Length: 214
Image 1 (cartoon, rainbow, N blue to C red):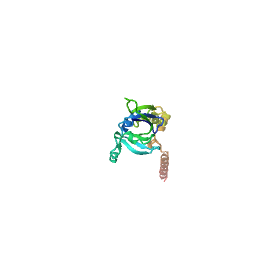
Image 2 (image 1 turned 120 degrees about the vertical axis):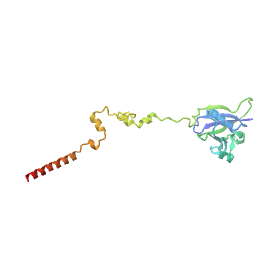
Image 3 (image 1 turned 120 degrees about the horizontal axis):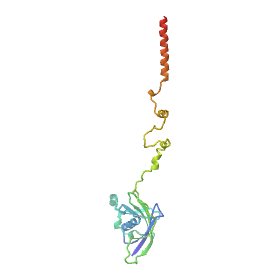
Image 4 (image 1 turned 180 degrees about the vertical axis):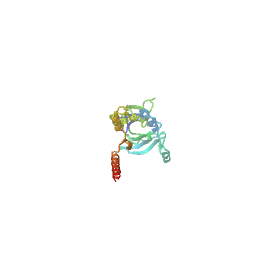
């Protein structure tokens, strides 16, 4: 019986890869679970293999936990699909998408075909692991940065004020505190009005004096 050795590479992290050996009679679900065992991800997520050409163009799909639409379309299921039925090339390639909700994509290539001449060996086997798999997408929500939040209040710090407190004029002199307050009409003397009133009063005095003379 043949044993396939696949090289599994993260599409976006080509320096992180695994090499997995698996028997030709085993299924794509067996390979799917072996890959996620090697990454530490939860295998219970909707995922698919695609038969691929040398340019990683997706062909026939083999699905795990497919949507109703895919089932209606008659998609091949991983648990029912033997690897040997999809191997036409000694360097066969598969494009693999793990977890359609928060996907990671992989390039998978058959790099060696061996004979299973070791009795009692358990497959699939992870025979080589290079690099730590990135953390699964969506597992953490970044907390807002204190440094970024403080930028909005830099102008207050420059004035010596604490943005968490209200305005405090206790350390200012009386004149400085008054200047910082918004003036109202009642606070400002109306010099123009006073001058006009004084002029009118003077004219009235003159009129009265003239009447007395008359």
